[in-house]
Amino acid sequence: MLLTARDLRWREICWPDLSVAEGEIVGISGPSGAGKSMWLRMLAALEKGEGTLALGGRGLSELGGPGWRTQVLYVPQDPPAFDASGEEVWARLCSLRAREGVRERPALGLAPELWSRSMAELSGGERQRIVLAMALAVEPVVYLLDEPTSALDEESEALVEAALAGRTCVWVSHSRAQLERVATRVIAL
Amino acid sequence: MNPIDLSLFDLAGAASLIVVNGALSVWLKLGLERKLAVASVRSVVQLLILGYVLVPVFSIAHPALVFGLGALMVVLAGRAAVRRSSRTFRGAWGAGLFAMTLGAVPTTIFATAMLIQVEPFWTPQYFVPLLGMVLGNALTGVSLGVDTALKGFVLGRGQVELLLAFGATRWEAARGVVADAVRTGMIPILNSMTVVGLVTIPGMMTGQILGGTPPELAARYQILILFLIAGAVGIGTMVAVLLTMRAVFDDADRLRLDRITEVG
Image (cartoon, rainbow over all chains, first blue to last red; front, side):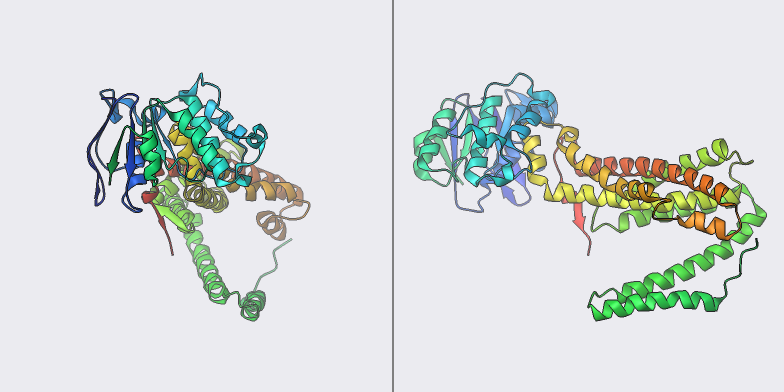
């Protein structure tokens, strides 16, 4: 298994053990407040809780937080409205030591000029696609996607789904139809 | 020229200005009158006590007494620096104390031992007031720096965490917040350095001139003090902000906002 999580727990919330194989898209569904986003944040090692995480047999302590997150990338549902353009944020991400040699960004239906506008001026859907495009370009081993198309129209949604096809993902969505389309299996919380 | 004596009546006259402020506060419903009263009473009591404490420290001039008073000043300044903030974190007190010590003590010793070259370097008439000036200003820098850093991490969480999510180290993710906090901590001293002599005549120089020192010598002392303060504010603020950053990230470079608590 590529990604495994065992006995994950944050305060009173416990999650089932998880194993994700390469190329698999594991869908996560469940009512609001069930702990879906928190599970992704735990998997991304952005939250401190209990349990063990491993990627290809290597644990979090071995890889270190930044090393882990370089390979297991969490994409938030509502990306922050930086007071900087997507281009500037992208330049900053490219300058990270862990991110040398990144690929080109996919378009995802975004007009190129949107990249030079302040992210604070963009709509939620545009910010969502900008961050997704950056995530797709850096090619981590596993994507942790928190409602990645929640602010998108059907056309953009299809583009995002197509771009993510074949990649290893843990995909949280409220839409049962979407999970049926993209996921190889679904875990209901 | 001998200084003209100030009577208690004169001080009461000066206090009438505070009463005017209080009246304004009541009129405009600023709610500051109680704070003004407490701050005024505190300054009177603290300065009178300081006057009495300095008499034996200056006349006995024993290193234990001077360093004891110096240590007390550093501790109180460290505490005050982190208590002003609207947010705090575990270990803030220690961070404030460490930052104040590292910012103020070496710069003061450098000034008395290497620049003024007073023998011994802890001669209380020089060491204590210089340390006090440096601490007072470093306190403002440290307190502004820590407050801005904590605010930056809380309000800018999304941005810091997005960088972390893409594999940034805590240092890479926090760089913007840290730079902003140090800059903010340095603003007051940079401002006062810009306008000094043009718009403002600093308190110490005023005091010296009123006390009979030739203005040219008073100006030289003031320049020395300003540079000392700038050095101490820079070092103190930087240390305090870096310690704040260290406190709010854990060993896996996670941003731990649960370690920050809102005060009041």
